[in-house]
Length: 465
Image (tube, rainbow, N blue to C red; front, top):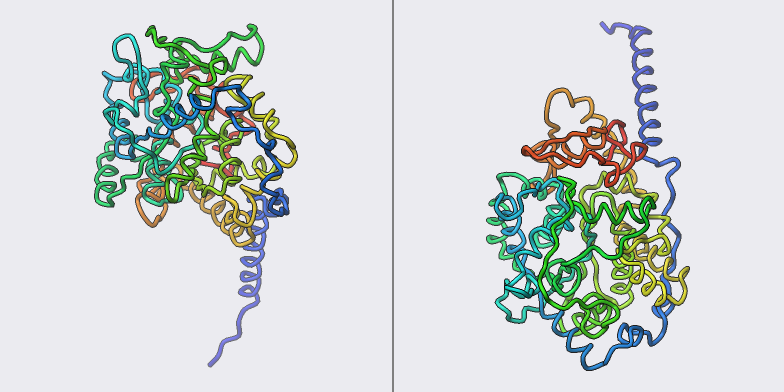
């Protein structure tokens, strides 16, 4: 005999449905689905609308054509291999090479100043480290890397490994590089026969011909410019001022245009594009997306797109893209920074129409073939809602230890639980002034190199970690 369904059953079902609806609306709000800036509705700008006609670097700097091109070809003959980079990280973890190195924190700037410059010195002169690794033999790159020097160095290498392995994000690889599992990365690269050669400025420019003996002109004390300058001359982990190199190698800057190695990007990328089949630009996007606030990096990305060079982005994780999505939709080259004021002035001088340049930059990011287009459509926004839900679940499981999330491979990120990188960064973002990693003390003034507390998302359900 059929029993009548009690009224309380229907009320219970309605209550659950209402709860699901409330949760769905909450997730939509948290993810930005209801209020987030939409990517610009773009049409591809004309190829000749952003840079001044006939304004090549040699013409702008007043260099001699023959000597200029000789240096361009010399620069274009340098590269480093992905396995060399991974093995270099392994050596950095040995205390004898760079005692202050902490893989989760040390930046590319730290490594250049305290490892690359000393290793590339020979007697009273110096060379590009890439040239020493190749034994002086020419070794043209197949790819060029755009990156910011204040990015964590292990993240830079992880993004390059991710490119070699055709992996979309690099958080999982970074965790391996920072742990005892680094040899597994070498093993996988060897098994896949990934031998790509990369042009990376830190390795392929002779630092002894430019920055090794100083930090540039000192700004007025107490100004924001001084604070930025002072931060860039100090080790991220210890806070100590970098030691300077005392070699006698001549230094060449913009006043010596032919010999300078830092002013020839445009001509070099054109040369490599013409001579190297399937030449690609790899953008190593740092944890805080500062690559899009560096004038040289933005100029490199737009120049590559203008020339028809394929570009790929490697980001730390999908969650970080959620966090910085709005900032990307409002990029303006005039707000970008450069280590040297004259570099930014030269870049802006070469831009005939800044608004058109910004339009091309937005096209590069959000256009129909843009680097982040696949993240911005309705289907991917729905996926972002799912990621918000997963992050809420992670928070609720926080007291049990590690966060375990299902992934397709160990390189997708998080397969072994929350990485040490995220653990350290999360502690720093919560305001700890004495963070110890492997027995080393970090800088107490972490606010100089981490986002403000208003930007921190470690303690909200829409966290970027």
